[in-house]
Length: 160
Image (cartoon, rainbow, N blue to C red; front, side):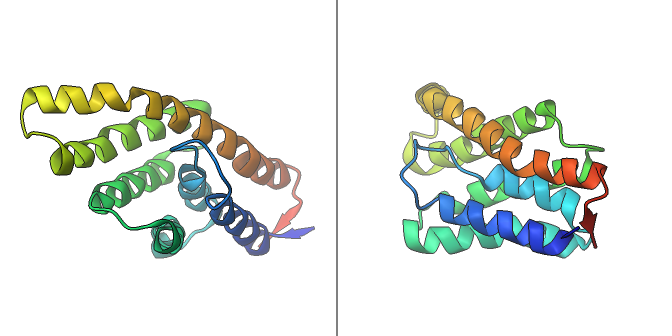
């Protein structure tokens, strides 16, 4: 029998540390952390704080940037999506990737491009390669973090 809180905190810490390992841009575990916390914990404040704290801790070491409000906002929306979903499925992960792409790149456009329709289109067009990395990273980390949680839960191997 595995303690649920120990299991969740362990894989969240693993995911935070994985941000420090060399990886392609946007290939990160934060979406999986947000989705997993939405299903693994019951306290709504804890659920919302876990992805924010995960981001903040790693951002302190990796560097802060001007579009942080948009990035953090995207993960709040992703966490709320996870809360509203009955179960985290591939479609939930892909919707999360899309939310991150749209919201975070809106911030990139706002701070780094001309505030014109051409600037917006250019920003999103140039971000498409990063979107592929986001999707792949979100799917990868969701599989290695969320699937084990559901498998343990299904087999009654997680205790509260």
